[in-house]
Every structure is written in structure tokens, then in C-alpha cells.
Image (cartoon, rainbow, N blue to C red; front, side, top):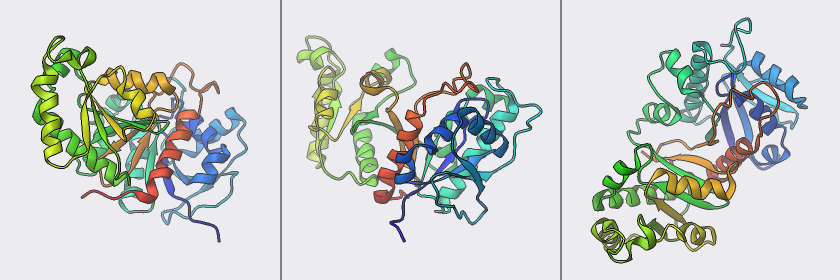
Length: 336
């Protein structure tokens, strides 16, 4: 009997998008078979179309409620929810049917993770407008996972080539983000980000807090946010025993983290961290949702309705999301 591989649930995503194609292509990748045992949660009819479209050497095998999987590199183990009416199905179209289906796949995957039938969930793209059309009261994955796991404010971490980036602020204007950079908020986030790292088995190393202004403000010459909030926060965190440095100029901190000097970076606003990670490697930038009792990784791209059903979608992000879930699953510590 071989070494047990981490078991990863993969919800198929919006059926009308590229999710089914990238799932099929990813499961045909030998590196995924070697690293993980994957259960796809989706619709058999849609996945059969995707297998044919992508000329993938895969056959679908049904997975029942027991979660028993066949161990064969040519098998796609599927928990079939059979919730897409093929007579109404169209690639690249927003529909309530597909929005509801995508939500159902996520919910069942979370059920599997909560029941510990899988070790992690690696998610595929969903469409916010399709969710809204279906009357789903959540705008995206993070909100669904947060609600289903009783996690009021999940944290997002990006990882690419071993560089990890957290975000102090995300979907707010740049002006509002600047107002949200306070001593108390930074202290709170470093505490929480450190806890997330520990759940992933990352117990060593220094977290860096990025600077906001050019050269971290040059002691007030180019702005006072560093002096007013960031330096005081870092000093308090050090007094509390946290291994943290900052502010480190944003033009160098990500390079230093990539070189291994820091185990992670706290980016102060959305684009600061997104530009750094996605310029380094757009397709291999993977999101991890932290602070939850289950491990979730995700591709960081959309449903790409414009190319859905055309066999043009790259599976690189899907492959990386599964591999990253498999990497952290053995060390993952469930939060209460």
C-alpha cells in the first residue's frame, strides 16, 4: 500500500465558465495525480463535455457519500450533483441555473471538509452575477466559506514561488485604504496573520510590514503614516514577542521576501500586493483563505466567459491551487 496522499475537494465552478475545462486539464496533469487524491464536485454532463472538448484521457467514476475514490491517473472521481439541465446549458452565459449549481458545488465541498472526508478544498472560478441571478446572498467564495465555517472575517494570503503576501486592506478605494492604516489595525492583522501561518505549519521566520510612502516616508519627508501608525505598531508587536520588521520600502520588501529574508509580507493595500505577486507569476499566484477551520486554496482568475467552451483556458492556476492545498494539508491545524 502506497503513502496516503492528501484528499482535495474541487468544486467545478460555474458550469458556463472555464472551470470544467481547467479541472479536467489539471486532473490529466501527472503532478496533480502524484501529489493528491482529488474528488471533483460537479455535474457529470458538463464534465463529459469538457473531457471531450479537451481531448483528455480521463474517465468519470462516481463517488458516493462514503467518498471512496478509485486510484488511477486516468480516472476523474466525481461526486455528481446532476444539477445542470443540458437542454438549457450554454457556455459563456450568465444564468441562475449555473449560479445555483456553482453554489451547490461549493456547499457540498465545504460539507466534505467539515466532515473531514477531505483535507482541503481547492476552488475554481464562479460568477458574481450568476450568483445574484440565483438569489444567492453571497458575493463570492470567501463570504460563502466564512458563513459556512462561522468565520466572520477570513484573511486572504497569496502565495507564489514561496513568497507569501497578506493584505491589510483590499476592496476599498486607495484613499479609504490610507485612512484604514492605523496602529491598532496593523497590530491586529499581524497577530491574525501569524496565527494563519501557524495553522499552515509555518512557525519560523520574520513577517515584514510594507511601507506606504516612497522610501517608507523618509522620517516624515514624504508622508507621516509610517511615523504615526506603522513604526509604533511594529514596536508594540516586538514588545509582545512577535517576529516582525517594518516598515520596509514597498520597492524592495517583496524582492527580499522572495529571496527568503521574510516568511511573509503584510501589504497595506490591494494593488501593492497584487502587482508584486502577479508580475512575478500571474498564473501561479494562488489565494489561500486563512483563519477558518478548513483549508481552502483558489485560482485567482475569473470564469473567462469569452473563452469558455473553446479549449483555450490554461490549467496552470488550477494545478497550482491543488498542489498548494496538498503541500499545506499535512501540516494544517484547524482553527476553532
